[in-house]
Length: 387
Image 1 (spheres, rainbow, N blue to C red):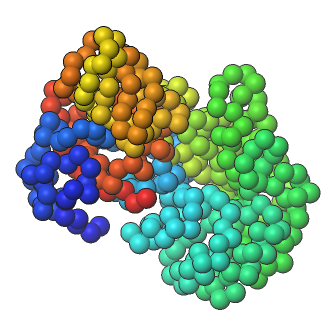
Image 2: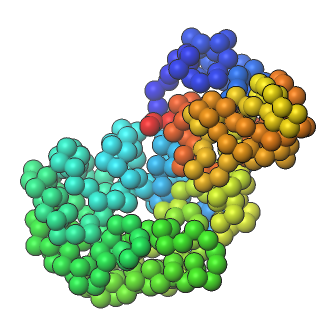
């Protein structure tokens, strides 16, 4: 990857780093205390642990991993999971696929429909590379027609997966008749090739209650049923799996592994968190690897402190940051309201965060530290994001 010269664009980096390349800066073994606040960091040991743990978990069940790269949009972190044996990388938009190709990713699942004519023209040309393996979703006849129109000059047919859906979910064919209509349209297309079935189960429940589990299981059963309804001239792909229900995906789709390549697309496990996925993950030994750091800038009331990090710095869509020193009640753009009488102006707090998918997009260059629990961690790497 290209070396970038650090400057004021790198939020909260020390001015002493400006003008240095990333490697030059890392050679100084910078301490976390030399950075300004607010700050987002990644814990090297926790990430390595999480990647190895999930790779072992999937391998024991005969499943492949294609972690969702849109979680971090960080090619360095994509490479970490690929080096650990991941089948490929999952992405969500045509532009994200272009980023992946620019850094040499060879296998991509686009877990979405692709009907943008600009992206389709690019894809058609990119498929001239015989080593590029690409799959995207289809869920409607109209979508097939849009792809056909955009792929008239494609180097080869595009592999597609039938996205399965049901009422209350996101995309996906809602009935067996709808699904079969899509299959027939793909079979009639000169530019598409059906290679599997799949979908996303996470929209059917975000709580591990009996009712929530039953709703997700019902949806996964539909994927299995549609796989069985279709004839496959070659070994198909069957894919699902966000970061909350991959155990149930393994239970429901895993028995197909002798007939199909079963791929989990979970992405948040690499970084994990202290909130949403800390509550929902079926893999209890995952460790939170991302942390926020914010400084107390005001104590306007005896039990209220204002921190210098807010909506522009930390995720809040799936829960506010947490600290044992009080309760973060709300955010402004650059302030957090901490209900606490136990902190002082100037004090730096480490914050547990919720939802990796909305953390990374706020940072262009993220320090990786050796140990978040150390008194003053050392920065050992820098991760560039592409949003």
